[in-house]
Image 1: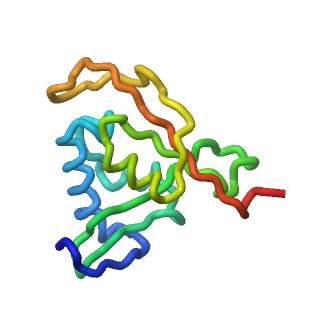
Image 2: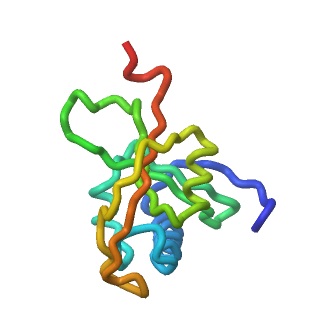
Length: 140
């Protein structure tokens, strides 16, 4: 699959099986999420904004995905002008990808949460907080 052309497309329920497989691969590493298992579609769908879901696809294979969740329901945050990401410091590939696409590190949340599964069960984990701000939207 390396070197194959890919397209970025809108994600919908038909893509869930491939997205869920990627989530499961990340869970197995112990370095992508505090979640011990993959969510079902209904739970995932309810948490993520419908207008901001993307996949990278090569033919029928899902190579990657991105989706947004709201940080607040307050109307003052209704424009998409700041994107935030929280990433375990051990996940160097994800940190590098975010930095390459304009995210900057704003800090580290030390001992942000405790792992509840796998080899790292009971371990407190730090989370690196990154953001990418629009130079157009939300600026008066």
